[in-house]
Length: 205
Image 1: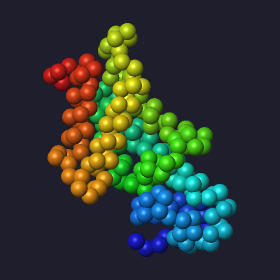
Image 2: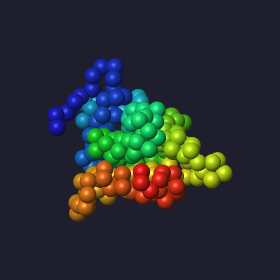
Image 3: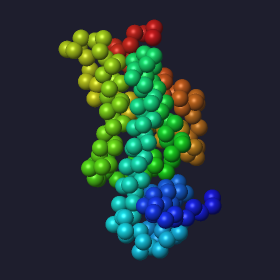
Image 4: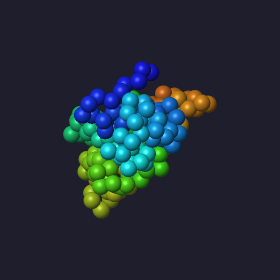
């Protein structure tokens, strides 16, 4: 891939873009700060104008990833239209789409060892996407009496874990991980079985 160098006034983003390309090629811990600087077309010393070190750079990659991810989730949910179930399933598909389209961001977010609360800015960005899924879960359970309603935070976390598992096992082209069905179908079927088991949707839905 041709190197896209530093453009005056945008050094910080040039370094982030360089780091994302390196993360895709080598993994989140497989590159040095000097490599990121070289790929951005600047000296290693210039990196420290914006980042304290590689981990700080990865945190920014993760923060930007969470912002993109949250925007995709919000668009997928679309206010619960055309139905709460359709919106809920759409957020799951958005998870798969994000992992495929933004692999560098995905790895910085979930495979770098960076805690989601590493900085207040990262925590706020990560919280946006979780909030979308919890709101979708809340909308899906509103027809159940409150005393019988499972906590939305619980089953949204389960769906998050299911989505993450499908992504990791079948949606990222890992060697030997041949999905028996398309990842979207696996996820949709899993969500349906889980939600029926909780009584959130009827058996014939």
